Length: 167
Ligand code: FE
Ligand code: FE
Ligand code: FE
Image (tube, rainbow, N blue to C red):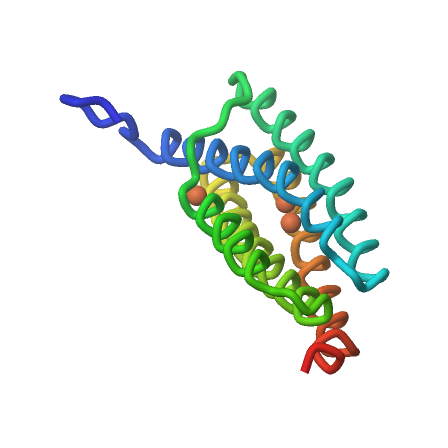
């Protein structure tokens, strides 16, 4: 933010700012997932994190394409929300000894990440459509569909056996 002027002057600026926010967030998630893969004890959970890491790298590539469509260089802006969710994950998982409880904690943390992403993509799709960028909206929609599917998969893993084993 400038000292005398405000950087977000209109809806286009707000749209690009939010694109940069999710771009930063996705890149932080790419960095955070390998730790979560290493910590996961349940093979299906580990596999789920592995496949979402590969998916997340593809999501970053889709966002690169959105920047290209907008004629802008891909760049992020700090997202204190995703940094906070990842810090909280590390704080909580660092306090857990029992590997079964750790799996439940990892799922809870991962779902907080997915829900943050879901809210951002929902907003970006609505704004892209309003601003006449259905090309960008279609790319965001593909990322949103993957986040929603991941969130559902995590719920299924938790409710089918991981929570029961942890309790
Ligand atoms: Fe993502
Ligand atoms: Fe953010
Ligand atoms: Fe995700």
